[in-house]
Amino acid sequence: MEINKIAVLGAGTMGMGIAWAVAGAGKKVVLYDIKQEIVDKTIARIGKGLAKAEEKGQAPAGAKDFVTGNITGTAVLDDIKDVDFVIETVFENMDVKKDVYTKLSGILKDEIIVATNTSSLSITEIAAKYKDPSKVIGMHFFNPAMVMKLIEVIPCLQTSQETVDTVMELSKALGKKPVLVKEGPGFVVNRILLPGMNEAAFILQEGLATVEDIDKAMKLGAGWPMGPFTLCDMVGIDIALEVCNTLYHETGDSKYRPALPLKQYVRAGWLGRKTGKGWYDYSK
Image (cartoon, one colour):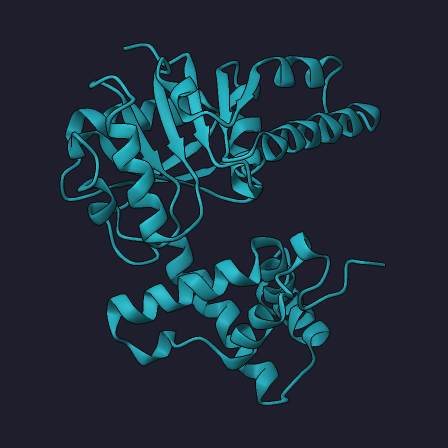
């Protein structure tokens, strides 16, 4: 089946980037979230970002109109019933995702593939809630999704080979570089990257260096394009903590236990760029 119309469920940071990337590749997008105002705000942010890129010569003239013209928004889940493919990027919580997949089972056509953008949750467990688990797969984009080329494609226990092949081809059609990964906690990138962020928080907790100097050390000494704290603020400290907890609980390995500062910052509501304050202060 040809894939021309794609639903993106969740209009948060990742949903925005994925909708932007998919629409930029010429596909029609139906962007869904539980409130219309959230969807409208996200589409407006995409337009604003593209307008600024056009002004700076970083995007061709007409890019804003082309991309936003390919996106429609809705707060009614039934509005996605005629799409050709679904990318789910709702809140990173197993109960929330299970509820969504149960609802999708009664809405979507039988042949529709549903790809979850989960960064750490069990896709096998998620798939068990869908009417045809063979149609469920992991399709893990990276932030910012409209820029980053990598997609981790993760079949779960129930995923069919036909589903895998379709998603690998779709990823390429979106201008991305897919990597096939077996299901496991954290997959590849987060299995390596999140413990690095967590260890940076442990180093900070021990008073060995400041946030700024730890970031500088990893940029100059390890060639990272940005330091672990800058990256954590961009990803979201709450997301980093959630992934660390998942790695810890899934493996039982104490090396994945989250550092106290991660917990404290989340408890304080200091989640990074999205709240204006994290390891760094973005309110100024």
